[in-house]
Length: 211
Ligand code: GRF
Image 1: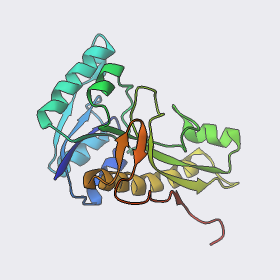
Image 2 (image 1 turned 180 degrees about the vertical axis):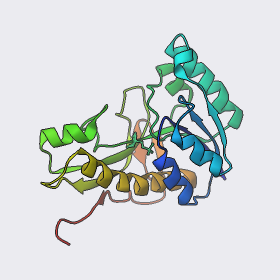
Image 3 (image 1 turned 135 degrees about the horizontal axis):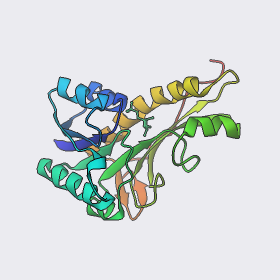
């Protein structure tokens, strides 16, 4: 069975969705840069090893990254799963785990990389918004895309309503992406995502406007 280490900084609802999906994947550990992250409590409740290192105690980013890598390597995971991990990982870290780090981002990349994606989507007046699971490469939020889900932006939306609609889809696509990775049915090949055992799954478009 493939194993993963999950990195998170906060709430951990994506971790919870991954656990609840009961994938054929071993969650070897959950690591955080914030000892108070709610996601750590979820991991503990599921009997998963947790480790937290406060990034503010490290003089520089590279030192934090090295400590993180040291800890990750103890668990020998096949994949590193970023689930609301709010630290930018340096190039050396990303290179060390090339092709083995995945992230979930709350927008339809390449639109709205970075923070406050829902507010920016509302400000831009887009009619469709969503979320993306992608491989992590040195460029922030712009790695090869594994799966996306799109949701409508409705006239009465505010940031919270839109975020909730997107989050519901995050909880569908992250377990799906990990199931594919674990089965070897999605791989990264020279910066392209390929589905060697069949056709790529269609993007999810939900919900229909007037179903
Ligand atoms: C999610 O919206 C995810 O896309 C983003 O950070 C948020 C984390 O939420 N990267 P949670 O901690 O999984 O609840």
